Length: 423
Image 1 (cartoon, rainbow, N blue to C red):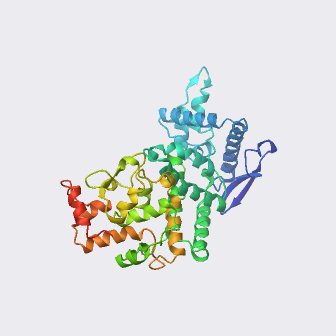
Image 2: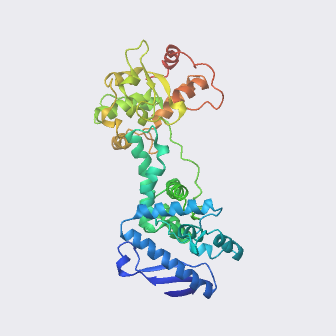
Image 3: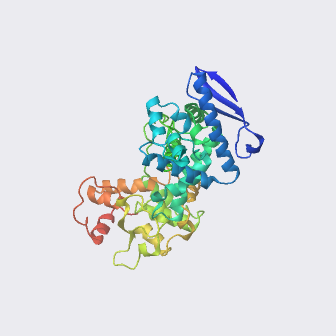
């Protein structure tokens, strides 16, 4: 066993025995002992090493579940005796009177201390080693309350950015146990993102989302598994510039370019219909992609879409709404009365497909325009027609920011108001 002193603190370095190297990624075990006293460091090193060997033995036997069970049991026993569970090295750091109080709490049976209580209050039960990749596996179960009501597509889109954030961290830092993640590791990750802002055209918003998703996974596992780790996850975010505004398409551009005969023939039928349906409804691409037959009411006196959470979550509570169908949007929906099967289960490629087509065929009004500009165009046309703010917000699925009174107008009234707005 080798003690090293760096920055006035002792560290333990010891070669991992060959029999444990299948469960330990490093050739040597290295950890801070958090003391500048050589005598105390030797005491802590012996306890820490024995604890680690016991953990490796269990992992080698494929007994991760047993390790977790034993650790949870030790936490409960310590709590029942009035103590917070601490690992042996941390117990050794406590004031003498607190250590003695823990020892006094160990029951004695005919001269033999209770081993389970002793292990719990003195911290000799090893914690399960949870690596970053393992934390992501645990997270899906621990955060299941966040997935209630999500469709398969929504669940995939919810999972993907978390998978991406974890994979980025693994690529930069490696698959470390959570307990061994340091402030330097996080700064390395932040530096990698900073280089990307300058050299790979990445954005501060993308970086900050990665930090948020990474933090969500690690904090959730830390809390729900009661690991009591001080994870260095704060102070990473980059300051974001002013949010980039997505410009609306002008009415003239839509009429002369997007609705020009033959302009959209190169798009697949469903993508083309979704684009046309957006023009006079302002619906989000994902909302149209997820429509079920029950939401498409073409036989009503006033044809409309009744957006509701059928088999999926809506973006917000106010996203549940009824939108009249007129003009090119009504024609598009009549051609697809059952919705859009091609994109219902996976809307991720929809915007990319349409935007690429518009870009390749010079159908974007400016380089800053995108498909989403049709939603903004619908709102601008309603504003120009002096449609009341309450109605505009209802149709766009925006919150009202005040108490919502009444139904907001009949479907027939909404349809009449939208006649001069529609194309």
